[in-house]
Amino acid sequence: MNGELSFLQLVLDASPLVQLVMASLLLASVLSWTAIFERSRTLRRAAREAEEFEERFWSGVDLGDLYRGLERRREDLTGMAAVFHAGFREFARLKETAGMDPMAVIEGTRRAMRVAMSREMDSLEQYLSFLATVGSTSPYVGLFGTVWGIMNSFHALGNVKQATLNLVAPGIAEALIATAMGLFAAIPAVVAYNKFADRVQRLEGRYEDFAEEFANILQRQVHLLGGEG
Image 1: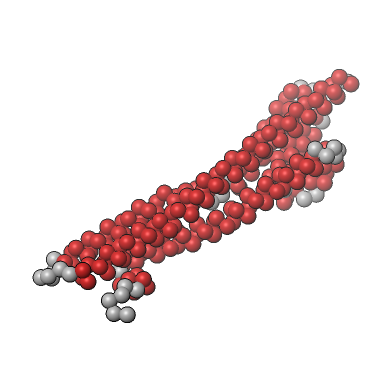
Image 2: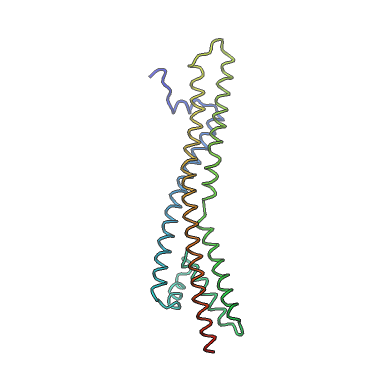
């Protein structure tokens, strides 16, 4: 085994600063993978719940019954159900206001749904900024460790009369490990960020389309009630 460079030994023999760089990159990688798994489950569940709610909404169910069913568990509502609940609640409140203009009722309903959508988007986008930060900064952090390790290797050469590969190889190897760890942390974070950002954008478009269609349904109801009056 003599002469072979052990990965663990290279890490243990690295300078304190390079060890700190490696530790920070390892921590960033662990946290980013935790965020990746968590966001994957959350976005998958959000897409499934949106599909189930849309199927129920367009099944011809009475909107009042649907709202009352959601009202019983309003603290746990998320996604499209939360948008519908916020819109219908505001619609029912404004509709009972004496002298309220029908268009003002619809506009108030749209505002309530936009607020609910904004909250849902904030929830869905959680950890995405962290993944973007890890993806963009980890290669540079690793490169800093690499530069520092190579500087130490060349500095050590100045203290010997004859330079050999055995003298510089460990320092250069530990430096390259820092670069590799930076890429190991960055690549999954960048891939996951792009994938999740696309899924969030698709869900946002789905919520917006639903909110607009729901507002149109309520607008027709308002006009029918106004015509009957």
